[in-house]
Length: 182
Image 1 (tube, rainbow, N blue to C red):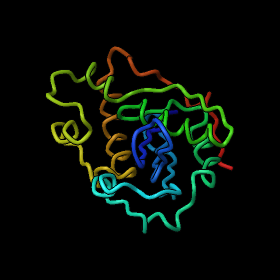
Image 2: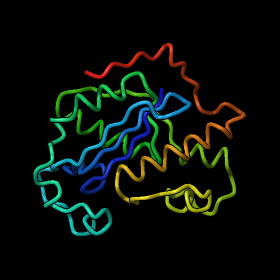
Image 3: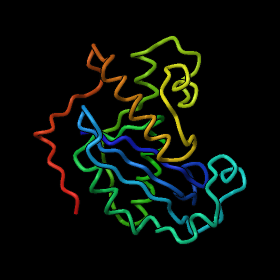
Image 4: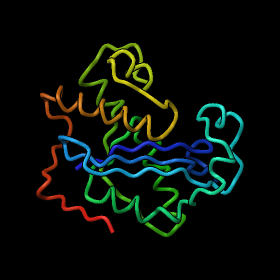
């Protein structure tokens, strides 16, 4: 199993920055089998640059859950799955930071679609999600929003699986990855 993840935040990983949105698509290597999405109240003002980039305003997240309210959902949907993201260290470390503030140790195998794309489909001038999706004709609706970026990353990941003749992507047997949502 794989979980393709994208987050939107109030800034970089370091410091008191918080999540404002999360999207997770659980994938069995063939198709999406489960998903989770939520806006999140960061408990602080969203900086103007981030509001402009993502379109997520303070008003949009005012009544959204805080991360503690959805932490169990994140733990459950990503359990026994490889954590996949475009620039995985950002998304993974952000979720790990939020969970550590709640007292959880968060460990998952990770796979970066930026690094994997460079190996499996070399020669592109840019491996940013927007430019790579454009050059590969992958639809990207809702750029800089967690659900739109994660959905495009699912399509990119599926393309990478098809191109992976060297088996750089760890194959995970669904029979060994039993998943239950609480």
